[in-house]
Image (cartoon, rainbow, N blue to C red; front, top):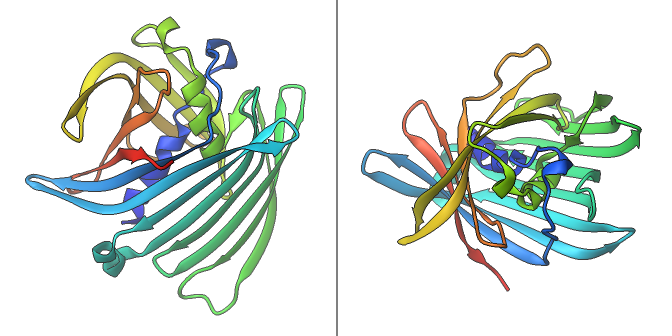
Amino acid sequence: MKKIYAMLLAVLLLGALPATAASAWTVPAENLRYDIMYKWGLVNKKAGEVSIRTATNAGNGEFRAFLTGRTAKWADKFFLVRDTLKGNIAHGTFLPSYYEKIAHEGGDYEHNILKYTRSGNTTTANVTVTKKRKKDKETSHETKTHSATGFTIDMLSSFYFMRKLDYARMKKGDTTTANVFSGKQKERLTIHYEGIEEIEVHDKKYRCYHITFTFTSKNGKKTSDNMDAWISTTPGKIPLMLEGKLPVGKVRAIYSGTVH
């Protein structure tokens, strides 16, 4: 179950393309919902759900983003997940100034806070990590610093930046990279644009931009299997589906609607 949610959150990392490829899309106030589906042969069972809410009036040229994720009741018995992500993100550049993750996963607790500063092309994040594993008697506290040169984002900010991209200007096979910060580490994200495809979601067909992407560590080692995502070609550019493989079967994060 933990891998299912890792793949779900990875959908937020699709947007790490350079700002020169961006269009005039602006962030709306919205609340998007996703179902997490486990598929193996004829089995297609809901394993959890996620909501992503945007508040556009945070002030200081920023908006606020909130993600909450939880496993379904049947999945709680195997690996309970209750995650919350929060962030402050600039309207114009989609770069974050603040990122927070509160995770309750399988009896483990972790609370990460990242505060960003930028100087020229260098991004630095001061990181605070508080955690307590199920087997631990005490809660641990750690501070660290991430630094990277080039375009740098996190899970929440990239979700919005990807929807700003002008995919019509891209060619099939185009690739790009970006830095991604989390509480634990920094990774390198490589994205491949696969062109326009038609997919079916909840018995309706949609034209989508298809993307595949991978994550690597600083030494170039792959940190996850390749994943696929499909983003609607409509003006809202809503990510409609993410798919990743598991040792047995596959997992899909499927858009289930917008709450008004």
